[in-house]
Length: 329
Image (cartoon, helix red, strand yellow):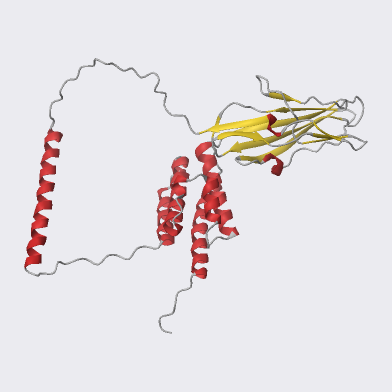
């Protein structure tokens, strides 16, 4: 009996095909993945194929990697399915597992897994290191400035003044005059002991109400209905990230999805339900913004509902954790 688990040791070739130097004459294992550099949020498919080397005999049991085995730090497994090829007699010729992977942080990461082969005598041999396969992701590339032409002896001509240039200076002078006039009025009013009228400051809007108002305004814009799907998810996640900053001082606008979830997990008002809503919203937005995913129509409304429910759930938990004092008592 032979059992193969995980991903085998491989020798990378130009076509990114990884082959296992197995000593077994019963099963051959190959793994294929595109090792080229990708943009954060894009997807790569890992093909793991076990081929039966025994003619007219059933394939020995093969244990393929699970979701947990495929997830390693920044690498996340999204989907997995199997394709089985059989002979006319019903004998399995090969089994192929196709795993869709993605990365949401920049860097070079090894796909986890160690290939183990267990035979009938119970001996176990480690045939491969963990870093046999790798994935690399970067942020969207910036413009190539290597082709810019620089002239050392360039000549410059003085531009003529336009009407806007003249008007701009006039506005500056008027602005300075207004400031001086205001200062004079304040000084004179103090000399005559005349109180300066001040309008009362408006009460600050609570962070949750402000976020809910912004989400409602975004919904009314009907961006995704007009084909501006990326703008829709970008504005939605910006509102949620500002809510976290206003409510708890979390600089979510400068964090990745993973960092934002880690920071939110550490607050006193954390709950499993609210974290689940936040994770679903941010992951779906990342797929749209970085992987150019196109969600179904109902998923757009679901994303908005997740954002609204997240803000309400956090505000509710905060109220329970910080009850107000009844002034009448």
